[in-house]
Length: 224
Length: 212
Image 1 (cartoon, rainbow over the protein chains, first blue to last red):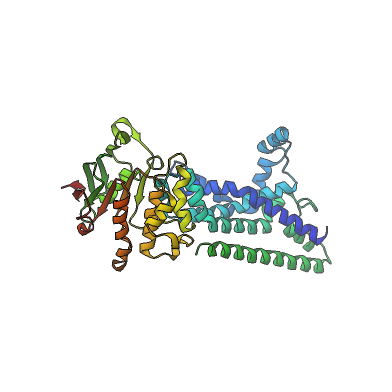
Image 2: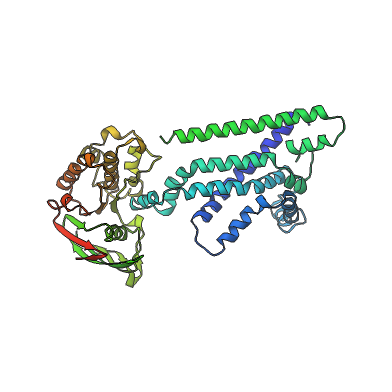
């Protein structure tokens, strides 16, 4: 595995995890921000669970549920031919689950901070609730959505415990940057390689943070 | 057009109980702060759902709690200018003005875009963002936005409240122009009788949730 291939795999897993879970994160954030129903705090607790659980527990739960012999995993394989266990897609699932609470939290706060008076005004102008959400609430919450996706992406990029538990550490398939560093550390005489990957890890993370800052500022500037 | 409002609604410690029938061009509702004037407008617009009562525009029943009728806000076609302009901060003035147009495509334009822009002198403001408007300008845009949603009835809730004393002249003459050039039934709520004394055709005085 070349360094470039490891980074490409890590980025692919983190991007897929973030983009694929964002729509669901928006829906869950909206439900938590605006919904008034029994079981709301239960949903809130479930969403935040991966933030608090040891990652190895989250990974183990994923393995038991989504693994080839797990109830959901077996169903997905027999019905759609989709397998997550020990595949890069499984690594993306693990990364998405770990980043999900951060994403939901940021989006939820952004939705809650949107002025309800503006939504009422949109209603008097003829916008139904869904139109109001699409044209007023969501655009105004956009900086929060971006911030949430960036947080989720950062979490996904650095994910370790749940990933290695769920999809193992397979070079070229599930071995992300963090897992590759872990393997090399256990190999005697690979200090230089470790240092190189550590440097790359810092570089990629730093670039991602700079990019997110830039995006957030561009969105903010569009408002004034 | 005749407007019939007969509603009861509990608001914290205030019990709103109002019955008004008007077919005037400009109906003024005056009374001290906390009399329930804004809540009355919110009930007519559909922002608040009243505990009991009826709201009717001619034969169109918007609310009739006895029959379980409650039409959602967005289907009522009632223009509403709030105390604060409530412009959408992420949209230019032009897009704020055009916002209601998306939702009333089948309605023929009674108020055309260019006419409203001329009437309210908004031409120079169209490309600006709401954050860069003065209080008076913002309130004029809010008025234009309400008109361009092609309403059947216009509600004005203290439209001068958010405007500095010195800038009120940026709004009042336009309200007069509006009344002179457009025949649109209007309910104007204020706690400053001087704003409406010479203008209103019917004046309703409210205090502590009731008409007095």
